[in-house]
Amino acid sequence: MKLVPRSAGYLALLVALGSFGPLTMSIYTPVMPSVGIDLGAPSESVKFTLTTYMLGFAVGQLFYGPLSDRFGRRPVLIGGLIFFSAATFACSFAPSIGGLIGLRIVQGLGAASGSVIGRALTRDAYSFQEMPLVMSWISLGQNIAPSLSPILGGFLAEWASWRATFWFVGGFGTVLLVVTLLGLDETNRYRSDRLNFGSLLRGSGEMLREPQFLGNVLTLGFAFAINFGFLAGVPFILQEKLGFTPQEFGLIVLLSVGGFTLGTLVNNRLVGRVSPVTIMKLSGWFHVAALSVMAALSLSGILTWWAIVGPHMVASFGTGMIVANANAGAVGLFPKLAGTASSLAGLAQMGMGAMGTVTVALLSMIGGPYVAMPLVIGLMPFALATVLSARLLRVRPHPPKLES
Image 1 (tube, one colour):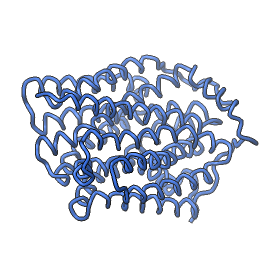
Image 2 (cartoon, rainbow, N blue to C red):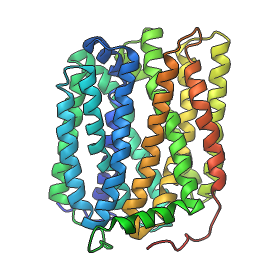
Image 3 (cartoon, one colour):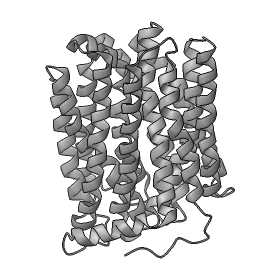
Image 4 (cartoon, helix red, strand yellow):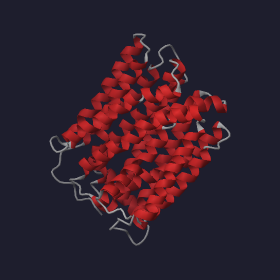
């Protein structure tokens, strides 16, 4: 059955394409301590398997968008899904932590195809005015898989091993490949005759000189640095310091994911009533407030699950308010270069996300009596940067004419 643009099936594919990158990360987080035990690696090295995945994901953003602008969405997506599935199954056979770190880079390169092409497919089918609401619903749908996958990851780890999480994700990528092969037609109406990197670089430079675009991608990137920094640090605090099992962690982390879901739902209600720019300018303060509360609890000597998960939930709420608006604002400005705009937005997300995990991993090596403070010290600069970068945004009645 063919997936007609703007149909329910087409929307479901967009959700799935955006989901398998986050799913790959969140299904893995509850098994990270188990990976260290099985491969004889310290927790800091295991955290870098998350970092290298995001680095691969960030680098992949640079290629899929421009290639899809030239050759079309469908063939580039098919190639990316094949690459992702093969790399994921290879991760399940990693013999050492070094091998897993290297394979995770390759896996991230493949996973980038889903988010980049998914955003471009959205821009191909919907108007600029429709995109904030459509992106918001897609973000909500994308949140279902990552919210359930930590529970699934915990069960798979206890039922089989941490390697089973890669078997599951590889199977999911294979299903998406089959759906794309059988159901998706080409949607790019603006394909160029040749791949002109000079033109692409000029287009990218034009985007980065546009304050509205820059404000969207920077705000999005700093929010993801906070989100992924939490993902790198929270599993080890809850499991190694507080003694929760992977399965219990998967259940507890639903509260944090619930924060993102609630933020997305609130955004859905506000879109059309409040400007997306206004929403983004206010949302960054949730990150600042969450980390401030976490610092106060930690310095007071309070170390319980709710002292970690509560602030994480508040921060996730703020991110949920930002993601759909920032993606729509960045990609919607450039319909003729939607793939390239999507690449730059994705690069900001995953590149800064990797910075967040590296910062938390390095600060965690220092140790100390206040186990939550590496999260606070490492992520507070990103929280403040989220607030400041949103100040670049201005409410505009129409998008600027930068579409060439």
